[in-house]
Image (cartoon, rainbow, N blue to C red):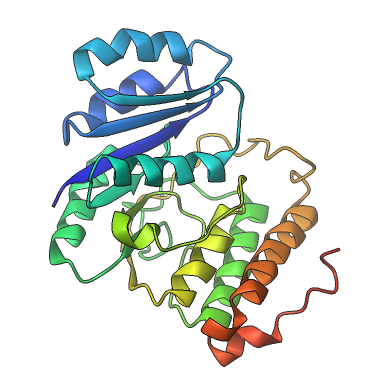
Amino acid sequence: MRSLVAIPVYNEQDTVRSVLERVSAFTPDILILDDGSSDRTPDILNELRPEMGFDLIRHEANAGYGRAIREIFNRAHRNNYDWVITMDCDDQHEPERIPDFLSAIEKNDLDIVSGSRYLRDGDEWAKDLPPGDRRAINATLTKEINARLGFNLTDSFCGFKAHRVSAMQRLDITDDGYAFPMQLWVQAAANQLRVGEIPVELIYNDPNRSFGGGLDDPQTRLNHYRCVLYRAMDQVIERLPESARAAQLADCN
């Protein structure tokens, strides 16, 4: 099976070189999607590309995380990859976990292998304390996703994942922003994808990162994510478990 490691980047001039050097130790099959970086990231990528030979997609302007991941899925499909592993470029995802994902892929019994920062306890895995609001939102929505969609997740927001490319082509995901995972889990349930988790380190290098669009307020962010989740369920309600039908859209106008 052919596997691609894909990394969306946006203004990652301080980390992109070291991350790519570490990733390239595990695979030559790398795709970088530069989502409209305005710092030195494009220059660094141009310097590294002749030596590393990675594939590159470049947006002139920032289009959003969800849009970047959808383009990554489509590029992996066009280039005949069987799996795509997505990870961030801010040193919060350890490239040394790539072999763990490849081992899980080789078992060939899942369609999504999702990294979880909360699957194991202990200092080896929890290198940082998560910002309180982010952990609370993650825990709230993970519990709700499990209850409504029948999953057994411990971390619904981790971007370090392996995706079966053929399975991703069956999904209808439209969210361009950080609420992308809400649609992903709904579509995974509606298409009866097999989902499992493996542990990854809990690292937060930038607890003050801005989400933009008013989403820095935790309650606004929770409401937005929940509304995306509910709308996504409403669109495929006939293909979801009965437990999904209790979702209310009253506060999502």
